[in-house]
Length: 452
Image 1 (tube, rainbow, N blue to C red):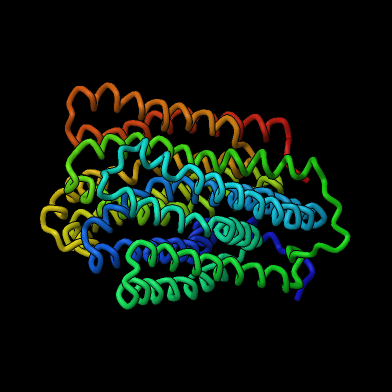
Image 2 (cartoon, helix red, strand yellow):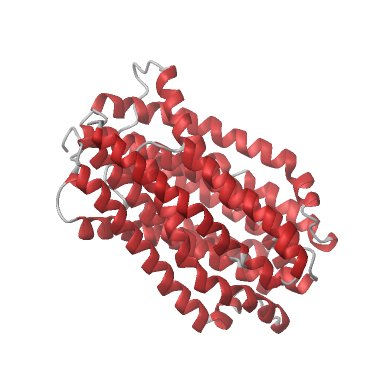
């Protein structure tokens, strides 16, 4: 095979190339969501509504911790893609090696912090007394897989930067099938309930991480993992952390803000909490499919930025925005039409389904508008800018959401008034994000800057 990576993202039709690059990632993320949904579906149908509520009560926390892993992977992706676009193979090799060790320590740190704080956080969220024991057990079990999740996202980031978005999909299919099989075995045959689905998730995560690491380690491409003669560079470690941690924080901040939303949801009765848990599965379905386009956006922009191709940078952003908005609109339409059938996957209780429909119908209409915020953040990441966008996210999707809860929701006190905070915060965050991206874009290329 060739000794280098051809930066094909810098030439050819962007409409076609972004779509073809995104499709494997869409299926990869979709499968990951469906496999994760199987956890909730299995316990909801075979272990009862309390088990469903216990696992569902952890959804936002799981999103917070996994968001940190995904963000670091996207940061690694941006740096790798920029090096590929600039033809800098030396820096690419160093990035791959350094990022591996960073991902290992990062995953372990998040695991330990999460496990140690699990009970405190669940209690602070006013998790229902009848649900908290199961929630604590599931969360601590799931967190054991964080190092594996960090390494899988590391591998996916490196491979997708080189234009290979299919291999992670194949590995995810294998681990996902194992996950579903173990879910059924542990819950139905061994009656392990929430512990069983947690164990199944951890095992499948380590399987997918192992497969992607084997792929990178035994590859003869320029991005192969080689530790021989590796000299650690504090400057490169700092660069990866400066880009990866804010990217992870951007993901985690949404989840952190949603902790206040979960606390507000927990102020309603148990049926509403369970309905919200079932309907919240649609969030992961839509967001993660849209996230595939965001990865494409960041990767294409990074490569063209490295190659100094100004027009393709801007066009990559515009096309990605159109694709992500359209995907969310289509999925939202089907969720509105088939909402009841969707919720019945997770529970057989009619009252829980009715409660879940309240959230599902409103959110399905709003999902597509989040593209203006998230796609713009991905575009800025492609230009190696994450700190300022992170600050904007903290204000728009954290501070404003909390403010909404303690003002608008506190005044009206209805579940609809709570759910409306999402589209409000997306809009208020997207506006400054868009302005920032275009300012950085113009300044960067006006000054003739590019990474070489």
